[in-house]
Image (tube, rainbow, N blue to C red):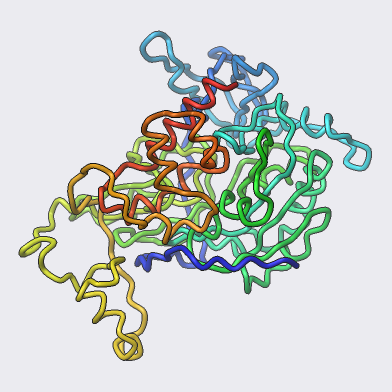
Length: 457
């Protein structure tokens, strides 16, 4: 098995990891499916109020690619279609049945072709689980991939333990890998030292090991180090939990969107895993599981590249964890940044607090420290400074600072030349964290990739 060892990156020792236990969650009566969770599509309705649906029944489709359906996670009755300005579809509300009924999909796994697999993914509504490079968007059905990359682990702060989450689901994962291998060569990345037979026993794919700090688990990093993209190529990426959803389709013939999400973070109670479905309110997991005595920020995803949510927002099919951190508005530090912070993590090697805390004797005496981050910026935004900081935490064969400058200028030719086709916003999360200029790098990358797709496709 090929192994890549990454020498650049940064693991943030954040406090608040989830226990390997399953908590209970109250299932709501009404599920609200939000089209805005699927970036880059224009929804067109396939149902009306009063229609009966099953799990796997189409609710809407994409205006550009009409064969790309978006289906219901539960069975029940369409109760309401909520619209906003200019009749934009905000949500499709479904009054759920007490017991879920599933649409049945049939396919001969032994005889199916590449076109059969793609058609079933489009019809079942699971196609949006497949992302692509370039553009870091939902895979375009009119583009043929040259490879499919699946990372079986996440290296971000407080990431879920997918070995525990997917324990015993090796047959499900294998069904998905076998089906996808009919489309293109499948590459599966395993964390060095991981012993899960569900991952190491996969066939019909190329297995490789990855060792190193975050962002070792990011698909873009693995692509860049295993099979770098060539001009004009398309590569698909799929999260390991989403791969399990696809596997259930090919193994059981149903669309079962249930997944385990982790609740983590220094300001969270009940830090464990919960079985959820898309369309449930975020409050189903968070309502009584955070410190209400201080202002808190709820993040769908990890603290580096997740996005802020409110308790009354709906869960997305893409979310695998929720992080709760303090806003920091109640914190007042003596002398601010000028005073050495011994209770905070430091990236700079010359910081006196870091030199003391990272001392070998201190580590031996007190062990590795875990820190409680909050949402403060701790500085002001200013013009970009070329300092080489990004190169220290991004283990990809690109020039990140020059690429960011080209993206700010929206110079498409320069962006492509510098590797914009290979990256996603999440790849610059650590760069954004260590950035002296406090630049919103992920937002810059997202805008640049959207502009590039609009101009080129």
